[in-house]
Image (cartoon, rainbow, N blue to C red; front, top):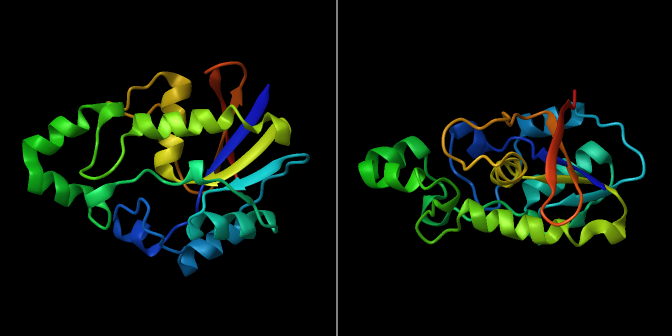
Length: 191
């Protein structure tokens, strides 16, 4: 059985402004860097992974004082034409069309972007390959990725309230065994 811990990167200016980041490679801001310096996770015998985006890599380097293995499967969801915009503004602009798209849950697709189900598939395919690196893994990644993992582990269809709140300064632990056997284990404070 593998233990996989997911951590959301530290804050960026876009996070503070409420903008959708997606694949836009926004760095962590001074506040995010200061917060990441306070985060600690006592682990031994684990493989450290990161999304290739600089906000995740920098967070991993600060928290763990070493360079992570870069894994493209951990990259944030591609939000397409929605990147750089506020969700509230998109809801105002597209009205019922936006609501209908959001109500598709796992199959919601931003224009020129990817669905949460596609994110789940790439994460699940990657998880199946990591055993050769040991049984314990820590991944510094993005909210969209962690939401997709939570949906996989809890059968949440991404409609309605998320069953596990994702916050800065917390790690989310999951166990993986067999084909598509992903279960939520615990939420771990990093401070």
